[in-house]
Every structure is written in C-alpha cells, then in structure tokens.
Length: 561
Image (tube, rainbow, N blue to C red; front, side, top):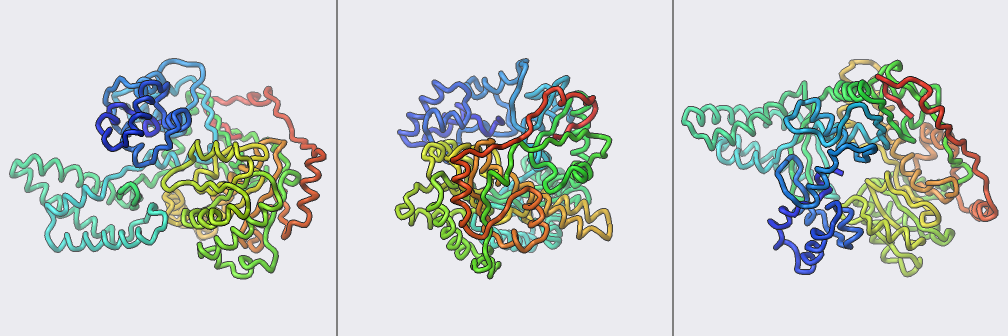
C-alpha cells in the first residue's frame, strides 16, 4: 500500500497531544508491536477505529521522502528487496512507472523489468492513472499571495469567484466533490496571473527573495494550469478536511495511457484482468470496444474472454418495479433524496421479511446513504436487524465489514468503495439493493476528459459516442455492484433495483437480458427460488484450463482477460 496507508512515528510524536489519553495508550502499543505500520493493522488488530482526520496526523505524507526508523518506514523500505511475488496496488505500480520514466534520482519501490505483471480490477486503472497525473495546489496559498500582491479591483474579482465556488460547494450534501472551471473563472485566473507576473518582476528587481519564491511557485502553477489547450483544470474540495484545491491534468490522457501500456508490456508480459472489461459487449464487439476504450489497436493486445463460472439466472432473484410502484409512476422521485429514501426503506422492509441473510444497500450519493441509514435505524427494532452505515469521510472500514460478516442478518448501507473489493460470500450477504443506476456525474474528471477527446475529433457522431461512453462507464460499475451479491458458485440471493430506467430504457433492458437477470415485479416466485436452493441447484460453470492461458506469445502486447 502507498504512504497514505502507513503510519509514521515521527508524525505521531509531533501530533501526540491531538489524541486523548486512551487513544495515546493504543497508539503507543501499536508503534511498539506493529509489524507493518499499516492503517488496516491498527484498525483490525488494535481495534482503533481511527477517524480520517486523526489518521492524517500520523500517516506518512505523500511526496515526502524523509528518513525515519519506525516500522512503517522500514516496512516500505523492505518492499524494494528482491522477491518472487509482490502484491501491491495500482497507485504504487503507476508511481513506480512514473519514477522510472521521469528518471527520478531515487529508485522506484517496484522493479518493473522482466516480471509478469497482473493488474487485477483493471477497470479502475484509468481513474488511478489520471489521478497520478493530476497536479494540485491549494486555494489558500493563492489567497495569501493575492492578498499581498493583487490590486484591490483584482482582489474583488478573485473574492467574488471564491464566493461563487463556496456557494456551489455548500450545495453539495457530502461536502466534497469537483467542479469544472467555467470560461469566466479561467479569465479571472489569467488576469490574476498577469498581475502576479508584474509583481514577480518587481520583486526580482528589488532582490526581495522571500516574495520572489512565493510568487514564482504560484505563477508557475497558474502558467501550467492556464495552458487550456494542453491541460484540463477543475476545482476539488473536501469541507470535512478543509481541503480546497485547484487541479489540472494533461488532456492527452489517451496518449499517456497508451505509452504506459506499451512501455510496461515491452519489458514484461502484462495481463489486465477484469470481470467487467467489455461491460455490455458480446464476444464479437468486445475487441472493438476494448481497443477504443484503451487507446490500442486490435493488433496491440490479445483478448481471451472466458465464460463466467456463475449463472446469474439461477443464482439471482431480481426485483424491478411494477406499474403501481410510486417510483415508476413518478420517475423524478429518484432525484429527491427524502422521497426516494422513504420508498427504498419500504422495499428493504419487505425484503427483510422474506430473507434470513444480510442485506447490502448501495447508493450513488452520500445524502441518500445517510437518509436511508437514519430511517433504517429508526425502524431497526421493528425489523429485528442491526443497521450499519458507512461513516462520513471513510471508505470501507474493516471493523464495519467484520461486524456485517459475523452478524449474518444485519443491514449495511454504503456507497463508493462498497461497489468494488467488498467480498462477503454466503448468507451473510443474501440481499442487494441498488438504489439508483450509477451513471457518471458530469464533473467526474475522467469522464470529462474522455468527452473532450471525443469532441476534439469533430465528428458528426460525437453526441452518440458521448452517450455510449456514459452508458459504458455506468454498466461497468453496475456489474461491479451486482458482483457483491454473487461471490462463489454456491451463492444465491435477491437483487432489488429501485430505478425506473431498468424497465423503460431499451439499452438497460437489453443489458439485463444479455446478463441473464430476470427482473420480477413481485416476490411471488421467490419462495420457490429459495426452496430450489435448499434442495440443491447445480451451477455448471466452465473450469479454466491453465495450459490455455499462455498458448499465445505475449511479449510486447497487452493481454486482456
């Protein structure tokens, strides 16, 4: 895992007084006995459910390479030692590639030559790759320089823009998100930068080194960000962590990704592994979709597509909505968190009466997650189930996941990270509720950059291609979400989707049919479905033949599976 997941004893020493005496006892024991220094170890083995804000005080800061003799730093140094097998995350892989490609003076954590590289969950690689290429600078740093060096008129324009950004930020329930900068805001940044350059020239003439350093750094960042033909810029905020940043990334995302894949595969067999690569594509169309999405030609990769070992038509009892359902009759309800949550909780109550196992509710917004969680907790005694809700500002929490697995009839409400990497086989997860189809939001930087690429092609079919991109990204996330319910060939359960588009949008109807998921409008046949499983259902998934995996030459090619 990366630095952000590893604790630093020096950081703890500097911020020790920010922790209660009880928390200090736990952390003192942790730093004496920890094996890895990882956050997960602190949470699971030392039972400290540390908040994101307090973890920030003791984690190894990203972008810094200072020496420390604590276990966390030693654990990371040990990663560089030779080994037969290295298991890491995508961010570390990309970081090692960039360190090597940019000829950094320090060695990368990972050796990327003469290895077999397998990238699992490869559908997430593009987003992680974009994040690694994103540059950021804090709005507060620009504010300080603006107060000191801008004229009153320019300060007024700048302050007005900040008010507008704050107003938009306040409208976001979660307190975190992204906004694309408008042309008027870019013009204000350009005007600010011109004035700062004048101030920088004057500071240099006056040999004012302190002012020169401040201005040079900010001006260089603004210079780069304002190369609008080269960089895409946006505003990113997190109110909880008091983080407000100006972000920018290269627009030639596709070229950079293509180069990354080619360089890695020139020295190593490179396998991209994902169960949701082609989303809604059959065998015939999958190569074309993959080539377009990954900026490759058909000759640059080998596609091996395997039949699923699961049979969703036998393992999933799907529930859509009948024509009398309020959400189907008034589809706008899904955009009203209160009304939508009310109807979802009713569906969960009905489902909880009919199944014995645990229920996972996946939402696409934190507002809906909290709304559903609050309503369910109010009726938890009535439905006789423990209700667990993803905490604000956290991703998957090992303690919460462990409680859900052990209870076997609890209800967990989550968003974001619970769509992927969440594995609870067996009856501990027997019901899944997807509250809304996970279409990408317009402010998503990856989605926006890909849209810009399509618009730059100046083709008459751009609108159609952008629409296809939107559905493509949604189907990948939807399939990941449904995959939380069925983890093995022995799993079975009920899938409830409370979004009217599953029966009104032809593309979505076709997708469910293509994935052999029959959506019922009632629970009439569910008893028979579960009785069949109690009596034994045979899943006849094909077994993989290992000898077949390497029958084709792989050198110099990306291998999709």
